[in-house]
Length: 285
Length: 254
Image (cartoon, rainbow over all chains, first blue to last red; front, side, top):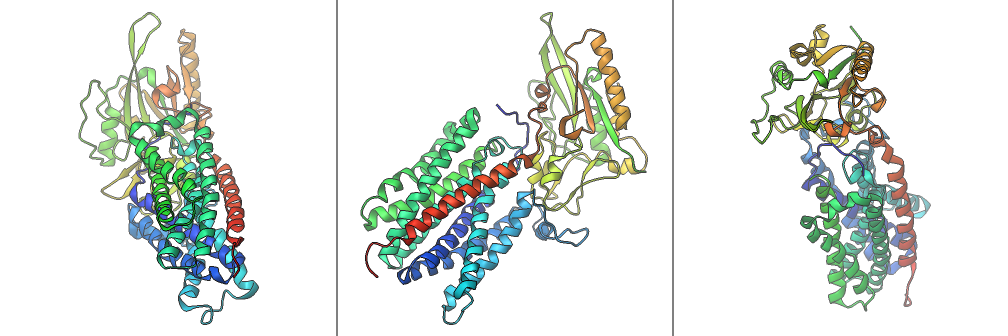
C-alpha cells in the first residue's frame, strides 16, 4: 500500500461546488455545441438552453475559487507573477493550467451566451465555418475544465487522489452526465422539444455507462487504499452516487414519461454532487 | 553570501528536550498551539504553520526484549526537487541563494496546493494571515551568517548545521561509526530522496516509523500529470463519440 504522511489541504465546500459547477458548465457547453453541430433545427432550443446554462454556472466558479483562497485579494497572483509582473503559467501544475483554462473557456461561454440571448440574427459570430471552429474550441476548453479538476487532485501526494489515474476522466464523464440531466430537465420544464429530450436522455445513458466504468477503474486502481472510502460514514454518499447512476440507467430506458425522466435527472444531479463530496472529503480525513 | 546549506539530524543523540522547538518559536515569533496532553511526551503533535520543528517520540522494542525511545526532531527537508514548489501556481515558493525552499509571504495567496503536495506533512495553513507557512531555514539568520535557531539551541548537537556537502560527510562518517559499533539498523535518510534533501536524518528504524516515505514512495506530484490527462482525454473522446451518436439520431421526421 502506498505510504502517505501528507497534511490535508482543507479543500472543502467551495471546491466541491466549483468542481460540480465546472463540470456542469463544461458538459453543458459541449452538449450545446454537439446539438448545434450535429442536430437539426428542432434541437436549437436545447442548444440555446445549454449555452444559457453554461455561462451562469461558470460565472460562479471564480467566485468560489477566490473565496477559498486565504488571501482572496491576491487571486490575480495565479495569472500574473506579482514579482516580475509577467504572465504566470506552469504547464506541470494543474492549478496553474486550470486557471487559464477557466479564463479561456469563459470567453467561449460568454460568446455563446451572447448569441443565445441576442439570437443568431443579431449576433452572427457563430455562423459558417468560423462559428463551427469556435464551437469546437469552446467544447475542448469546456471539457478540459470538467476533467482537469480530477487531475488537480491527483497531482499531489494525498492518499487516494494521488493513487489513481481515473479522477480526471471520472469527473469529466460525471460532468457530461450532470449536464445532460440538467438540460433534459430544463427542456422538459420549458416545454421544449420532446425528441431532443429523448436524445439527451440517451446521451446520458452513454455518459452513465462511461462513469460507471471509470468508477470501477477508480476502485481497481486504488486497490486496498480504496477501503478508506468505504468506511460507514461515506456509505450514504456512495448510495447517492449509485442512485445517481444505476437508477437513471434503468429509468432512462423506460418510456420518456414525466415522472421517471424528472426523477432520473434529479438523481443524476444529486449523484454528481455526492461523487465530488465523497472524493474530496474522503481523502482528507 | 550564497552557499548550499543543510541540516544533519542525528536521532541517536536526541534527548527529546525540545529546545529546538522552543528556539524556533522564539526566533520566528510563532505563538504555537495550546499544548495537547495525551499519554506521551509529545504535546506538539505535528509540523504545521506554528510548529516548524517537531520532536517525535517513538517507543520501539529492543533485540533483548526491552523498550527504547526513538526521538527525532523533524523539520522541513528543503528538498532539491520540492513537491510544494512544483505545484505552487503563484511562484510564491522559491529557492533561495542558500538552496533552501522559502514561501514568500507577500506572494502566497493561500491556495494550499503546496499542503496537498508536501509528502512530509510540513506546511500548514495559517488562518490568521491566510498564508501557507513552514520552516524558512531561518532565512533571516542565514542572511546574517548565523546558524538557524534550532541547531544553535540543540544541547546535544543532535541537530547539526553547515554546508550540505559537509553535512553529508559527517552523516556518512557517523553512520559508519554506528554500524561499526554493531548498530546494524542505523541508516541515513535524505541522501537520494527528492534529489537529495537539505535535512539529512540518521535513523535507527525504518523511515516510515518517523513519518518519512521510503525511497519507493518519495515521489513528486507531477508523476500523475500524464496519466491523469490521458485518462481525461480517453473519457472525453468516448463521451464525445457517445454524445454525437445519441444527439445525431432522430426517430421521427422533422
